[in-house]
Amino acid sequence: MKKVFLFAVMVALTLTGCDPDKDPKVEPQLGAASAVSFDAAGGEKTFAVTANIAWTVTGHETVTWLNITPSAGNGSGNETVTATATANTSTTARSAELTINAVGVTSVKVTVTQAGATPVALSVTNPSNAAVIEGASVSFKVVASGGVTPYKYQWQISTNGGGTWNNLGNVAGSIEGATADELKLQNVAEALSGAQGRCIVTDANNESVTSGSATLTVSPVTYTVSTLAGSGTAGFLNGTGAMTRFNFPTGVAVDATGNVYVADFDNLRIRKITPAGVVSTLAGSGTRGFANGTGAAAQFDFPEGVAVDAAGNVYVADRNNHRIRKITPAGVVSTLAGSGTAGFANGIGAAAQFGAPISVAVDAAGYVYVADNGNHSIRKITPAGVVTTLAGSGTQGFANGTGAAAQFYSPEGVAVDAAGNVYVAEFFNHRIRKITPAGVVTTLAGSGTEGFANGAGAAAQFNEPFGVAVDAAGNVYVADYHNNRIRKITPAGVVTTIAGNGTAGFANGVGASAQFNGPVGVAVDAAGNNVYVGDFDNQRIRKLSR
Image 1 (cartoon, rainbow, N blue to C red):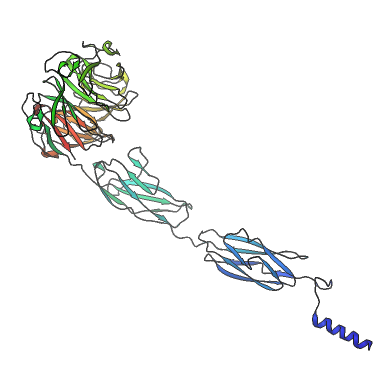
Image 2 (image 1 turned 30 degrees about the vertical axis):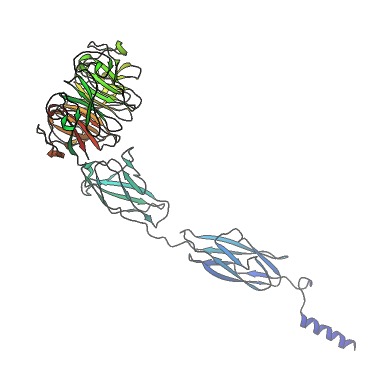
């Protein structure tokens, strides 16, 4: 009986097995694959955990591209684990290390790797051709793809049909985005018509690709010339349009609302013209003399230049009175500076002296600039009437330089831009000069020899340029007196002709079909859309509209 009982116990133990956690004779077991690999596309992979105990998986919790099922990472005994990897869009391979832990045994490491995406060859789209009108803005854009980011960009230009290419750099007010995916050109000159542009893209692996080229077509601005006021017969008559008369009009200025002011030289008056062409007299008796006062009570002695500030005050270069006068919008005339005696002296108000001042300009702060013709200098007057010399030695000649080291020869026209740069039309030097706020004088355009030629800088020619004006974009307009033309100069010094055929006469029309007879004064509105001309020998005020 005893033997039978012992045999039964042994069979029972054999059939039921034993618990290794309780039976010290059974060793705990834990194993798994040492590595799992994915291609760049990702997907699901499984690996087996072999164990005779409970276990957990860790190391995946913070890996954003890898998920583990069961999600809690818990298992018991032999079990299959599913690993899911998202697609790897980077060309760089990535990896994570999983750890399978169990009590009483050494942890098992499982390395999960994923290959990087196959690199896509670097490519770039081609910029599109563009056509604009002179003075407009234009942009060119490329889109890069493939390769390894980030990308670097370099735009290039060719002006000889792709024969040679030069890198572009950013230039304030002219070129923006020379090293970006979008190139922006501002105030485009007609001289750039036919130029080609392309972009070189370089990726992080220093691989480069060059786009195809785009061609820029620039059409010249077309100005239509009309007559704003004046009958063409010398005289004095207020009225509208052609029913009015002037007597050798010289300087002109235009305010923000389109009113035009005229220095009516031989009528000894300052006239005002509304945008509708209605002419009235702002100030002046019509008799030579000097008198401050209101309207017709004031007197001038051959007023030649005018300028207008933002408040509507008009400044007058009163040539033979050797004074700079100021007229309020109500027509009240006062003297800003000048003693009335020809000479040269800096000082305040009447303590200062001028020698036949011919033209004036005024900046946004109320500073007045004077072409002091007889003194061959450019003077500056504060709103309080303090006169200084911006540039010029006082001796006629030609020299660039700073302040008194510079020389002018009969400066006639003067204009000032928003940055405080002053432009001077030099009658006998046949040049247009530029003066910085610090008094540094350079030549913007003109060879110094009288003649007619469009071109850049010293390649251009003028014939006794008289009046100058400047628009908000920095384009300078010139009344080219003996060429009977109106010229335009870009900030880069490129000279073109916008109206006039060079023959003295009178004709309205488009561009070169128009005729002038001794254009003296010129003014331009801020946008450069309308240019006004004191057409001296035609006894008219002309308007150029684009």
